[in-house]
Image (cartoon, rainbow, N blue to C red; front, side, top):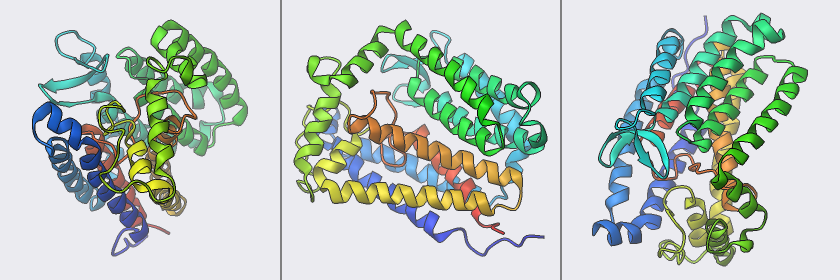
Amino acid sequence: MVKARSAPDIWLLAAIGLILAIGLVMVYSASAVLAFHEYGDRFYFVKRQLLFAGLGIGALLFTMNTHYSVWKKWAPAAILICFGLLVIVLIPGIGVVRGGARSWLGISSFGIQPSEFMKLAMILFLAKWLSEKQQTITQFTKGLLPPLGLVGLAFGLIMLQPDLGSGTVMLGASIILIFTAGARMAHLGGLAMLGVVGFVGLILAAPYRLQRITSFLDPWADPLGGGYQIIQSLYAIGPGGLVGLGLGMSRQKYSYLPEPQTDFIFSIVAEELGFIGGATLILLFLVLIWRGMRAAISAPDTFGSLLAVGITGIVGVQVLINIGVVIGMMPVTGITLPLISYGGSSLTLLLTALGILLNISRYSR
């Protein structure tokens, strides 16, 4: 019998707390100008962020103190509900269109993204499925194809919105979890080749995605169109230098960089806090990922181990893609920076998931 630790992993808890605190400060700094211009209230975005952070912290405290094995029982129901929400959000008149994607359910400015819920539900279900059928994971038909088919179905529904960013994060974290469970590299490699072909097809099927690729390769070819966001992001990062222009002193947030409080908030971090600030934030994310993987390695059972890998994978994949986009290393995908970017359901759900990760860390062997 493994005795619970008296407290969760302090390094992991500290990293989460520091990143969240930095995020609240940077949401205010990045959004104050836009908030005052559009709503007459410089605190409009940060007040809402504080509300969802409060809800998220409450959820984190609950899941941190609830034995993670409870979620194994609820995983099938959770994924069925999320599949239902992914279908409902596609119905015209019910799903709300924002940013060109029908990916929201809600009223007025308040809403939830079913794709955010699906990220966590998929990880919960895969951890349950693979922990119970780990002996068959090396078999393509019986072991690998069923979970991948489920992931593919969820990815397809998310792409119908379309929301390539959320779908990519869910897919990436799921593949990491499946690989960790013992899937054969030969199987995954073959499927990866098919995935590349499918990904190219998705890009060619939508002109705006193809524009994002061409803009990523040469943003200055269309500086006022497809390349605008990347160029303005680099204009923010460059002047930041070593120590930055100072907190609140960003120039790009004055209507140059679109939505600076969401996808490109790291640009504002680098502009105001410089290389030191940006590197410190990246270091905190690395600490979070390190301690998350340590919790996975030390978990007392396979379900806890795979669940920790999946939750850590969500954070890792999302950070990698977001910062890759901001510094011009990847095409624009619309992915936010975990715990930093402005967002309601994404922030609350991520804190809920991290609470589960903290609970797993309490049962280290």
